[in-house]
Length: 73
Image 1 (cartoon, helix red, strand yellow):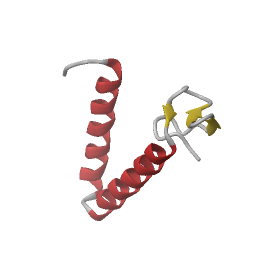
Image 2 (cartoon, helix red, strand yellow):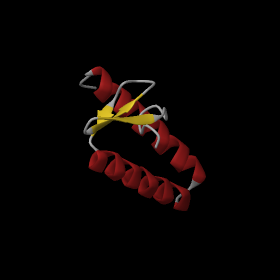
Image 3 (tube, helix red, strand yellow):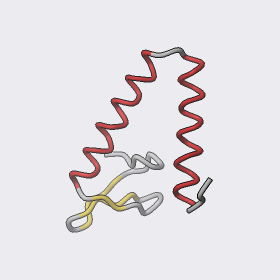
Image 4 (tube, rainbow, N blue to C red):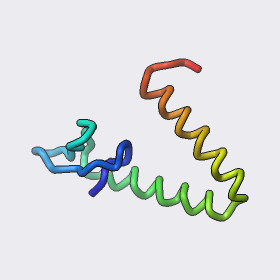
């Protein structure tokens, strides 16, 4: 299983899965839900215009990075 944040390896520690690279922890159902959501977003992007898909991916990465860093931008 791969980390949805950094694509590192997720290992089970007790009741949680923890990424060996970034230390992010998830409950098993949260990992499955995140993977399903990511797969659906990729399918939706592939169906749209390729240039728009790249721009949308870039915006989502920036939005996620701002959230992760606690910015209010």
